[in-house]
Each structure stands twice: as C-alpha cells, then as structure tokens.
Image 1 (tube, rainbow, N blue to C red):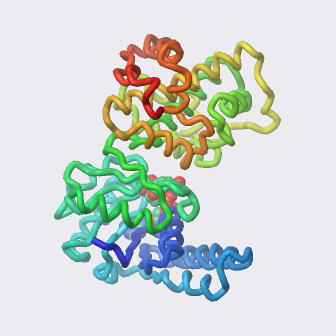
Image 2 (tube, helix red, strand yellow):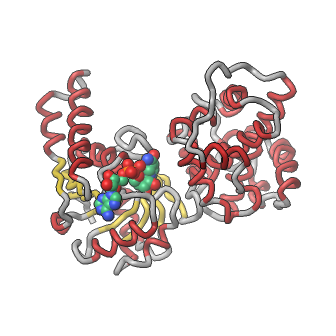
Image 3 (cartoon, helix red, strand yellow):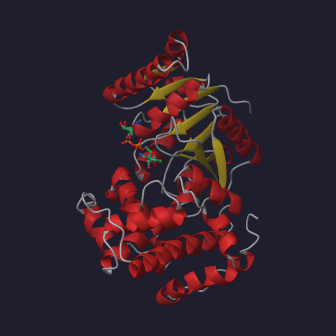
Length: 366
Ligand SMILES: NC(=O)c1ccc[n+]([C@@H]2O[C@H](COP(=O)([O-])OP(=O)(O)OC[C@H]3O[C@@H](n4cnc5c(N)ncnc54)[C@H](O)[C@@H]3O)[C@@H](O)[C@H]2O)c1
C-alpha cells in the first residue's frame, strides 16, 4: 500500500514528535488522545517546532503554517477510518494498549496498517487482539521523534511481507532510517543499550569508579557523546529500570543491578555534579573492558537469536545512541581473540556460554 494518510493515537511525548515528523514530510495526520489538554500541547509544540524552522530560514513561514495545518486533532476515534496507517503511542501498559487496539478494530478500514510504538512490550503480545495480525507490526521511534533519524521496524509473528514493505517505504518518505528486527525482548537497540547501562551501575556498585568517572571511560572506549549515567538521567533511571526489567527473562546477566533498582524505584537521578574526573588508570582499564564486554556479549547473543543483522546493530548504535565506535565494527577491528578475552569473565561470572556468533568476529561488517 502507498501510505498517504496517517493517524496517531496518543498525543504525549512520542505521539507529538511522530506527528511533527509525519506532517513535516508532507503527510496529513490525525492525532487523537483522551485528553484535550494533551492535544492542545501537541499543536502548540508543532507550531513552535515549525516556527523555529522558519525563523532559522530552513522553511518559509507559509510552509510552517501549512505543516502545522496538516495536523488535525480530536478525542474521537472515528476520523481514523480514513487513514492508511495508524500508529499507537499511548501509555506503556499492555492492558491500555490491548484496549486501544480492540477499539481500533471496530473503527479502521480492513486494509489499514496498524503499528505500536511500544518500547518494551512484545509486539506479538499486542497482536493477539488485532482482528488481522498480518497488518500489524512495531514501529519504535526514538525520542525526540521529530529529530532522531532511526525507527526500529519490528516484524510480528504474523506480519505480512507487503505490510513490512509499505511501512519501510513510509519511514523512508518521512526521512527515517529503518532498523528491521525481530520481536525479541528489547528489540535491537535496547537489547545492548540497557545491559550496558546496567554494567556501568555494577561497576559503581563494586566500587571500581564513580558514575562520573564511568561516563568519562565510556566516552573514551565507545566514543559516546554522553556516558551511560548522563544518558540515564536524560531518559530517567525509572524508565531505564522498567526497560531492563523487560529483559530479565533473557537470563542472569540481564538482572537489574542493585543500585539500578534502588535509584530507579525511588524515582531519583544519578548525582553527577562535580563528578567528572578521570579514574585511576587501572580502574579506567577495568571499567572500559566491562563496558565493552557487556556491549559485545549482548550484541553477539542477539545475533545468535537473529534479532537483526550486524550492520543494523551498528546503525542503531550510531543513530539512536550516537556511539562513535559501534559494536560490530569495533569487534571486527579488535579481532576474535581480544573480544573473547573481554567476554570470558562476564560469561564465567553469570554462567553464560560464549555466543556462537563470536566465530563471526572479524567479518561481521567488514
Ligand atoms: N518517551 C520516550 O522516550 C519513548 C521512546 C520510545 C517509545 N516510547 C513509547 O511510546 C509510547 C508513548 O510514550 P510517551 O512517552 O509518548 O507517553 P506519554 O505519557 O508522554 O503520552 C501518552 C499519551 O497517551 C494518551 N493516552 C493514554 N491512554 C489513551 C487511550 N486509551 N486513547 C488515547 N490516548 C491515550 C495519554 O493521554 C498521553 O497523552 C509508550 O509505549 C512508550 O513506551 C517512549
């Protein structure tokens, strides 16, 4: 299907960002929410976003007004009947999402493509209430969705191939790069990002370094603009803990670290003020090896499970997380022996076998 008209359910942070992205790309979009106030905030955010683009000379004021006008809003689901694609971005709660899709079944056309923006739930768990799960899949945008160039496109167990193709085409037309992946816990990006933050917290719990020092080491070994603690403070430790808990069924290595639970459950942030020194050399080396080992282990395990292609993991790392040294390219450059040396202590500590994909290191993306 050539998608022309788009509906979005949920006008919070993500629904608003996606609506701006879609309208900016020339599509008309109907944004719906239970809350009138959320819809008003969304329109104001769109007007401000396009207004700034006009002030900076990227578009004319007339284009800014036209883009804003392409977003129509309402609390009624009925206008979704005219949409080729409906993206759900309501609260991250399975019951609320199931209820939303039950209602959508009765409103949209039989050929309307339905997607969920869930970050942590299994797409196939939501698919159970879709009357035709072949037209359903995951589109996981990254915040801020009006700017971040990546979307994970998650194929459900029953998703039809032509539906995947239509959504990939739509993502390209809205200026997004698609990372096609399987419906596995954490999809592709959170599968290694969350354990990497968890390993960072374990290093602090073990007294190897302070949070600020771990961030400095991460900048050096992974080439990230911001270290794991700074990023957790942006996305909120509570949200990160929630995502990690959705990975725990993958095994002992994925259990949330002690302080991750304490800080996340308390709704606190990591204290980073005046804590940005470089740690002593030996500690820096140990922390660096742990962060790299964690990232490599989880990416290689995900490759064993065929979650996505190696180059897709690198694209996710570079685009969604701004890793200067993406995992597969870095592993290829280091070579199998060095990667195995980094993985061994983690595998031994957590009773996890070395991933089979270790044998591919050297030619993952090279
Ligand atoms: N915030 C992020 O960084 C981020 C990133 C990627 C994915 N996500 C996912 O996107 C989804 C939305 O997240 P968010 O951060 O935008 O949440 P949010 O809390 O900012 O917004 C959710 C909106 O959904 C509305 N809503 C709730 N139930 C509804 C219903 N039944 N019908 C219509 N509207 C309803 C609420 O009124 C609210 O405006 C979640 O699944 C979340 O996990 C969030």
